[in-house]
Length: 360
Length: 150
Image: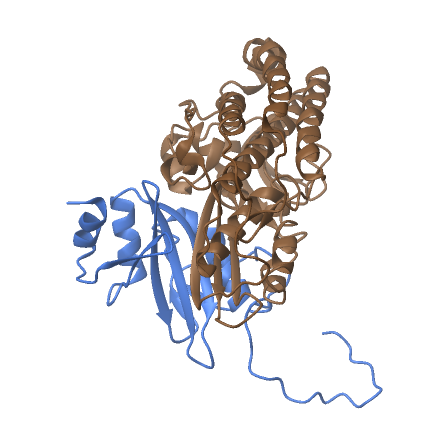
């Protein structure tokens, strides 16, 4: 006899407002239905009522983890409509902030995954590491969550002494190499909880059009930083980690390797940061009538903004946001099919879901 | 022949690609969205999203379908005069949530698919968020009388 187990919208495993109704046969999940929208905020509608300064502050609040990415994507689209090209130093600072945010997001995810595995020590270790990344973000921007770094035509704050951040990076890299990556890759607890669990096949990953580490863990070799470079990514050398297994362990491996690649990118951006201005265009902007789209590789995958403007207006006519969790979440239905009920919180967490983004 | 020209040939259109602000646009002309989706599957393009715009007055809506082809952002704008268009959900599984969202926000029907349960809000009313309606008639509620939410 099959029965339905509702998980959420307030689930102790993942404190995020969404619901997964699972149809089970004994301990095995046969199918699942997803429900989102519990905290839908109508931000796209609100954006139409904000001027070109206010809309940046508004979009920074789409997500609490990748707030920089959202303003970067929005500002890139608005720069296209205003005909502005940010100066090279601003492009480098954008890379530094984006990679620090990726580090912060991936380490946070590793901590939560460890907690869901029942590995509390690793949870604490990851959160201690995350604090170090947040300290760097605070040192640069003055803020720990909403950084207010992006503006139309560049960035708001300079990185006064980029080379001073290198020792912090060394420390982080050392800790990752010494503790986090070896434990996640060799510990029997991590292996037994992750290997072969929540598989998303390559074919299904293509069919669902998943993005980011979720896609790369299922053998899809895509990354906008390499395939459609923005900011100063065209000048950075890095690898795109790809795994074939499609299980929770593969998603864990991809993120762990991406942490190392982020450190590599950060080292290049900080040492080669060119001198000069950090913004262009002054304080008043004129936008042409039309639509501009911008895409950025966020920690969870591709973020896309479509911004439409009418010449002479201070407010956008339309802002459409496509977030990575919005693309990845429907695939969870396929990941949990055939899984044990006890594994489903970790499987859901393995895509690093963000319901703040999804319920934008 | 470049990938884009090859794609244009597969689509069987004489319209040229127009590159604007980083997006490669193709006017679909007489092509239906389902024909475009079928060819996108053949060339292994990745579906990204649908962006809906309400056109002024009663001109209808513009739906911009976006795909990624090896890092290139492709855009296909479709203007619909009424309130309905064909769903591509059966051809492109990834379009499920965004079709449901556009349906809920603009009350556009994607024919050939079901909508229940709603994605973003409870209830059965659609077109409540982003769709602009003509100016509402004066309220029948007498001054001073509190209007009761329906």
